[in-house]
Amino acid sequence: MEEIIKELEKILEQLEYQEMEDVYVLAVYQYTGMALEEVDRINQEKGNQEGFGVKKVTDMIYNNFKDDPDSFAGLTEENKERLFEACRDKVQSDNKKRTRTIHLLEGFINFLKLDEPQIFLEFEKLAELFQNINVGINTQLSLVGTIVNLNSKLDDTEPDGRVYLPNNDALLGYTYKYMDATELYGILRDNKLDEFLKDKDYPNKRAQKEVKRRYEETKLDYTDIQHACDALTAIMDKDTKDTTEEDYQIIIDNMNTIHFGNLAYRFIKKIKKQIELEQTTDEKQVEDKDAKEEPKSVKKEEKSRVSQREVNHVYYEAGKYFDFDLFKPKTFMNLDEIIEKLTELIKDKK
Image 1 (cartoon, helix red, strand yellow):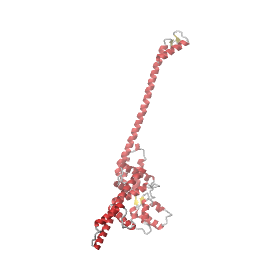
Image 2 (cartoon, rainbow, N blue to C red):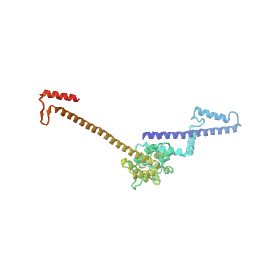
Image 3 (cartoon, one colour):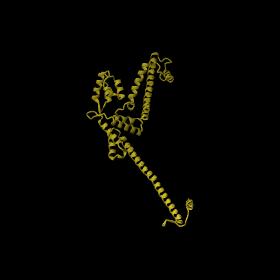
Image 4 (cartoon, helix red, strand yellow):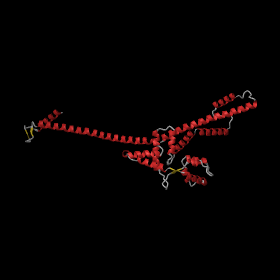
C-alpha cells in the first residue's frame, strides 16, 4: 500500500504544480497589465514624454522577473497575496475538472494514510478520480479490493439497518451561524466528522450541534454500497476452487453497484487464473510423486531379479559338491576346502 500511496502523491504533486504554474503565469500577465495601464496613465498625464514608453516598461518587468521571479516589483506582500489569491480563484474556476481532481485525490490520500482505518463508501467519486488520473488497472483493482474488504470488516450499519455518510457538498455549502467553515473543511478533509460529532469535550457546543443537525438533514444512504461490499468480500474469502458461475454473476452485479463495473471481468479473470494455477500445481505435484515412486519400484524389482540369479548360480555351483536332496556331500571336503570353494565362487561372480 505504501508504494501505491507514493504513486498517488506523485500524481497529486504534478497536478498541484501545473495549477501553481498557471496561477503564476496569470499573475505575471495581470501584473504586467497593471504596469502597462500605469504607463498609459503617466503618458496621458505627461504627454508621452521620452522614457515612459511601453517597450521600456515591458523590458523592465521582464528583467525584474528574470533576476527574481518572485519580485513583483512595486507590490507589497499584502498586494502580492491578493494578486495570487485572485489568480488562483480564476485558474481553479477556469479548470474545474483539475480542481476537483486535486480535491478528490487529496482526500483519498488522507483516507489511505489514516492511523485508524475507516469505512469508505464513496466509490462513485473514486471511479471519477481514476478516470482523470493515470493509474493502472491492477492498481485500481488492488485498491478497490482492499477497500471493499475493509468496509465489510468494519460494517457500521445503523440500528435501522441502514448505512449513512455525510453529504460533504451540502455541509460545506451551508452558511453556519456558529461553525467556522475553514475548520469544518479540515474536519471533512481528514475524515474526522464522526469523531467531531461524538467529541464530548469539544468547546463550541453550539457549532457542534449546528453541524450535527445539518448532517442529519442531508446525510446520504449508502446501504446498497455496503451490502455490495459484504457480498464481494464473501466471495473473496472463499477458496478459489469453490467459486461458481453464480459467484461470477454476483461479482458483476455488485461491482456495478459500487460504480466499478469496468473492473468486474478483470476481477473474474484474476480468480480464474488463480484456479488454473492451483490446478496446474496440483497436477504437477501428482506427476512428480509418480515420477519419484516409479524408479524406486523398478529399481527394487531389478535388484530382486539380480539377487535371484545370484542365488541360483550359487546353488548350481554348490550342487557339484553337495547333494541337496539327500542333504549330504557328494565328495568328502573338510571345512577349509569348503571355504576355499565358496571364496572362489564369490570371486568368479564379481
